[in-house]
Amino acid sequence: MGAQMRFEDLRGRAALVTGGASGIGAAIVRGLVGQGARVGVLDLDAEAGLALARELGAAVVFEATDLRDIEALRRAVDKVRAALGPITLLVNNAARDDRHRIEEVTPHYWRERMATNIDHQFFAAQAVVPDMRAAGGGSIVCLGSTSYLASHDSFAAYKTAKSAVVGLMRALARELGADGVRVNCLLPGWIMTERQIELWLTPESEKELLARQCVKRKLTPDDMVGPTLFLLSGASAAMTAQTMIVDGGWT
Image 1 (cartoon, rainbow, N blue to C red):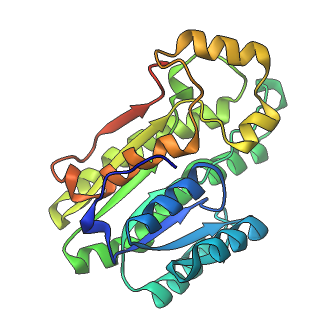
Image 2 (cartoon, rainbow, N blue to C red):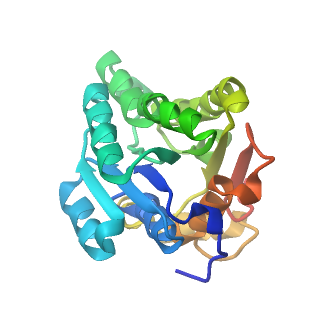
């Protein structure tokens, strides 16, 4: 990870990161721990989550959780709270960008995609808001995607869910602002996680990506850490209901 600014107000606070076992989520967890925060990680991938917890030590509490199961999500949040104390930072990161063509989508698949990519963002926020209200404030960062701004690839359900993240963020920001809770949205571009490289990246798509980006390099999960920490911290104290695009100038 490159050099990061220090956000001293994050030190000692309890944060929750969904989908934090790998990819962008794991980079954000490492960034938060580097700021002195204590982090609860919720993820379906138990192997990766436990490995991250071993790597980062006592600052991380991992709970293997299927976020599509809202009751399981609530139980996991309770366990993190019991271990780390009141949660005043939330990063809604978990998602899957599986490709699908219109004719292949069934009602069951559509609902499962919504559960995977948007539903848990609301219910994770609902679960931690009492902590934030009691503390006099908090910060929530919801990760969307620039994919819904572009006309390419075949994943209508994913794009629909990611566009809904922006609407959810603005609704939460309006309702929670009087409680001192800020809610913002981060829209990553095409970030080269291991999953993206393994499943989707080709020489042709990489060439097209770099031709469209203003920044002529591939973006990595570490590129999302600084913007996320900024939105969580008091450095962005006057920001809420805002969308920050971090895509190397692709859109």
